[in-house]
Amino acid sequence: MDGSPSSRHGSVTKHGDVLQIKVPLPFPLRWVNSYLLPGESGWTLIDPGLRTEAAEAVWTSALAELGLGYSDIDRIVLTHHHPDHYGLAGWFQERTGAPVLMSRSGLEQTRLLWGDGQPMTQRIIGLFRREGLPEEMMKPLEEHMQGFVPSVSPQPEVTVVEAGERVRLGHEEYEAIETPGHAAGHLCFYRAESAVMFCGDHVLPQISPNVSYLPDGIDENPLASYLSSLEAIRRYEVRLAFPGHREPFGYLQQRADELIAHHAERLDAMLSKLAEPATAYHVCRATFGERLSLHQLRFALLETIAHLIWLREAGKLTESVREGLVIYQKA
Image (cartoon, rainbow, N blue to C red):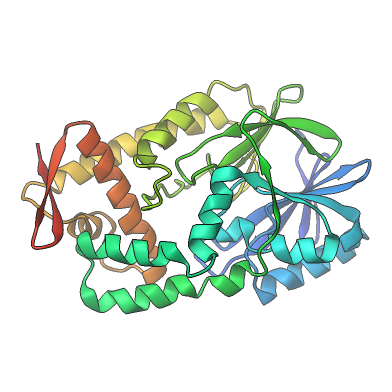
């Protein structure tokens, strides 16, 4: 694999042996990066995207353009469980018969989010009620979260990948590195011989990955996990990083440092919003503004809670419960 500029072929962009397919999203992010890597026994597909009619059409076109059939794909590898990466995994598995590889924590999250009864939905509703979200927004939020089920169906049978395991991607083996924070069980895949990393959403160029708190019992301080994962990942020599969003880039260590600095600034900014005791919802609106879609508000409030938990654990604020609401104030 070389580091020369990529060449474009319609919806497919070639970076050496790695093919980048931009799968459309109905969100401001616009697309998620999927990757295809050739191997002796077939192609490896990384993060196939959210299941929508537009995404299915892009894949139909891309495979035809490449002269590939579904039977040419012999494994599907997921960096993490978020719908824009995981959604089409079962759809592809039905057509290819290929195994779907993902972390154990990621698998647990899919069961909480979209398994029987969708238990995570009610946990998040309860969390948001305690954190000050207005009652009139609860029902629309519940319907919004339930609306994701078609975009991740059918769900795949998963083969669990453990941290440190060697995973074949195309011709080569990569080390699976667990990098929690953006998502529980998030995996990056690294090949030291070529200094190449598939970094999912752990490190993104230009934009900051969302870091959300979820009442899942898996990670009680996700921002601490994320900052620790950034410190760990920056120690790898990476010449070329393939992210889940935006374009491949060659400055992973620098970008990790920028993200660490970004969260330090956000922590200070949120603490400054607590001149008077307030709910997480108040801090969220003061930080991210009033002009948020329901989709954006869900992520913004979960990210606010993650930052407030970090500040609480660092001894910089305290929390109390008043009339069923969690109230934060400077220590």
